[in-house]
Image (cartoon, rainbow, N blue to C red):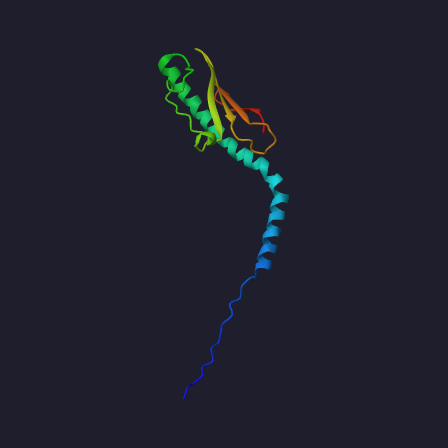
Length: 139
């Protein structure tokens, strides 16, 4: 005699596809509303990179001046290696250059290679022998 066993299927509580799509749509709408409020914060955070690198350049220029009684126009002379930008396969959002260097002063610039808020304006920071970065063009 064959005994019939009752197979009981346990239902697992879960969300169906429609519920998941609805939640994702709501999250997307909330992100679209909130994103413009966060763009200035994103730009400020990314500007920290420029400030730090320009401060490093300033410190290296100062050391070079102590040793050679002048500032240098060349990164290799001050022993600074500029980080690779995101356009050249690196992670840096800014390109760095020394604009001028004389016996008594220098000026270095960091120009954004990425438009952080999509308005077509690229952030620019500069530093001189005084050692404090200044924002020249605000993104």
